[in-house]
Amino acid sequence: MPLRRELRIAVVSPLLPIKPGSHRGHSLYQTVIRFPDRARVEAFCPITLYPKGLEPRSYNYTIPELGFQPEKLKTTFIKYRVVPILSRPVNGFLCFRRLKPYLLDFKPDLILNSWLYPEGYASMLCGQALEVPVVHYCVGSDLQRIPDPFTDYFTKRVLRHASGIIAKSEDLARIAVEFGAPKSNTRTILNGFDRNVFSIRDRREARSQLKLPLGQRIVLYAGNIVESKGVVDLVRAVAETGPQAETFHVYLLGGGPYSEPLSIMIKKSGLTDRITLQGPIPNHDMPKWFAACNLFCLPSHSEGCPNVIVEARACGRPVVATHVGGIPEITNSDCAILVPPRSPKSLARAILEALERNWESAKIAEGLSSWEDISKEALLVCERALNSRNAC
Image 1 (cartoon, rainbow, N blue to C red):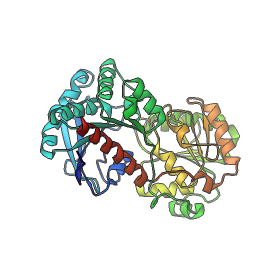
Image 2 (image 1 turned 90 degrees about the horizontal axis):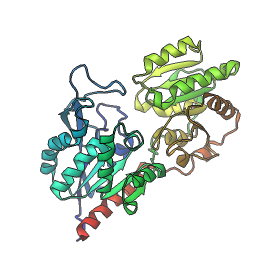
Image 3 (image 1 turned 120 degrees about the vertical axis):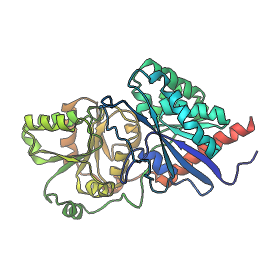
Image 4 (image 1 turned 180 degrees about the horizontal axis):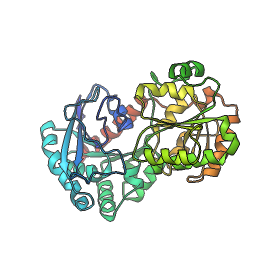
């Protein structure tokens, strides 16, 4: 049966922009807003509501304004109530019960889900109820950091019943297949970047715009301020360099639950003149920060396919990062030095080496895909899933 001229795709994800400038669900968002005109896309964002006083503290838990609309993506925010830990075995069903009426009204040809449990399980049940295929977009932590046996069980069930899997790295694809995803339906699509935003720029001009010292060597970190991102390792690495730390300055961009403890650690270590906790910054300033730095550093303990590395490379800036997840797949010796995770000494040596090396900006930026390319690949996976379903 031939495909319709215009597909109707329901995007289901708890990770979508929730306010102007929000970076949540960046790769999924950038992918689906570029689906061609023949695909009509609407997004449905389940939001968990916790009892007062029991909200999660391990990440930036935020309830969006229900009237907010991300640019270029019609989005419906759907609240459902949960209880930490206690309701986890049934969260997928609770999400399904709230999500189903919205999808029945939209009448999609296909569901594209991001986050395997509980939203992926809810999407699977909706797909069965509506008799439409479900493609799952694996982002990283939903496969790499499964917190309990219930989530493990439902995640594996979701993967076994998937019509298609899009993994952000070969490492994630391998894990998905090990968990039961059909290998023939699993496709790796690395992250991309916006060619109109990220490019090689003049460092001095960027520093002037950001009011940063022109002669300073700058090491940049951008991301959530959480322990799993290796921010403690980075502070300890600066301490490890001793007097050599005075030759560079670290700027930490972002916010998160570990911001205050990290600030205290920096003060106690006597590094306030070497490390600046810059806090969250607007998305539109990120190209300037990449242009302004000498080196981008991401010392994560685990990763899927970190988009910040792709964007730093697109700006011609070298990278020091950990050899975890999909990071080796988006770097090479012309653009990065990789070190073991949780090793401040190795990180310190790599930072000093990278700052002394003569890098070629043009080579660093080679071989990257744009979001337009990524979007076309993702849509092909959706079309194949729909064709396979129609052929049955």
